[in-house]
Image 1 (tube, rainbow, N blue to C red):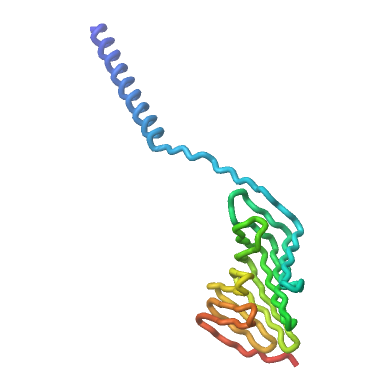
Image 2 (cartoon, rainbow, N blue to C red; image 1 turned 45 degrees about the vertical axis):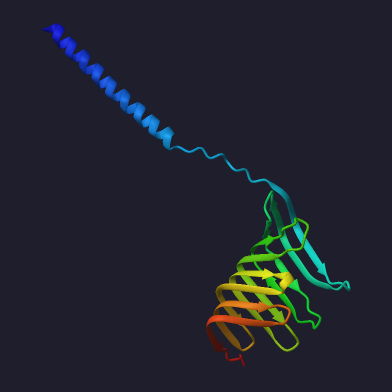
Length: 196
């Protein structure tokens, strides 16, 4: 009888051991079969500058644009660079200049030392334009500026504050050379009573 109990308990232990081993192997295989190895991509910064000022001139040597920023950083193999606090001034022959500022931006250049093709500005974008006759400021969250095309666009909400008015709209397209702004959708205008 004691031999029989010992045989049963050995068989039971052996069976339980086999079942547990099978479960362990099954889950180990499932983990390795479903696990995909992704090598870490290493971001390599190949150029970084602080306190940058880039100036563009026309054929006669006149300043037409100045782009300043607190820092500029480029990653290897990319055609975009990160800008902190970009400030673009576009000079016009008639003295009516555009002043565009943001807290962050991405510049696109197909060649690292080539001309900037576009500036994707974000985070508190402000555009001001002043002339002898008027002054106003435009604010939005994001704006794409294409300096060589003299074009600035956004699909975001736009707020334009002038001397006696406030204009709200959804989306904007500005021709920086011709000094025209086209407000795209949901345009609302408010007259602000001048302070006495």
